[in-house]
Image (tube, rainbow, N blue to C red; front, side, top):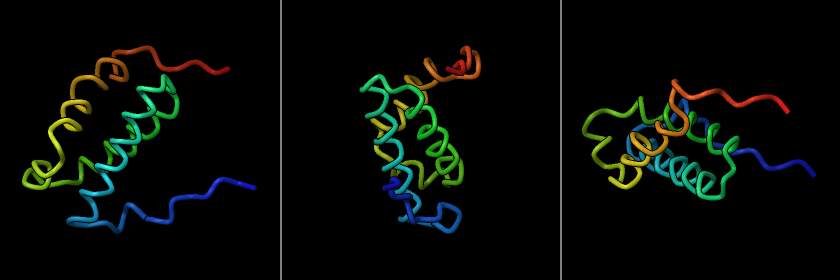
Length: 89
C-alpha cells in the first residue's frame, strides 16, 4: 500500500493556514534532523523554506521563535549552500 500524500496544496494557502502549514513542516524537519534522517530533513526543510518565504514580516513573527531560530541557524549550519550536497547511494 503506497504512503498517503498530503492533500493540502501549499500554493493555495494564505493567512493563518499558511502559518500553520509552515510551522508543521518546520516541526517535521526538526524531528527528522533529531532522528539523524538527513535526507528527509533536507526535503522537509526545503518545503518549509518555500512556505516561509511567502510569509509577510508580520506573519513571520507569528511563527514560534524556536522554529525560526532552528531554520536560520541550526539548519543553515548543516544544510546551507556552503555544505557538500548529499551523494547518491
